[in-house]
Image (tube, rainbow, N blue to C red):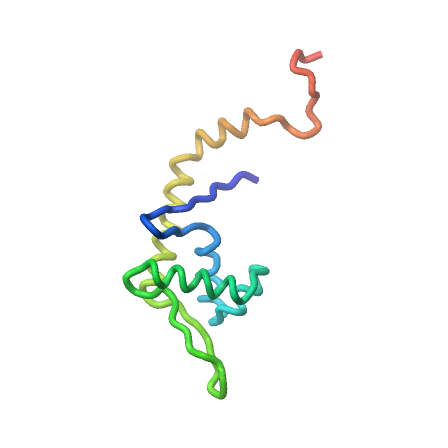
Length: 121
């Protein structure tokens, strides 16, 4: 399977497939810890990424509440949902624009099990 992975680098910030997946999983689970576990990522690493994203954008992408008697949790802010949507749009447009040259590159790959000889004999 061929896939395109895209990182968008800004001055001092980056959005890429890992952060997008983390945002998506936070939205689905309502928890930074659960999202990190699903990604086989430590709680500290997940929190660090959320803090990086929240610091990089003018408005935080993730809002969280401490645990305890009422329970904790996390959710995407409207801005977080919009950042995730825009990242996916950029990725979809890039995939569409790159489909033909990617297919051409893929056709040039050596296939597993193919003969190592290049003379066809």
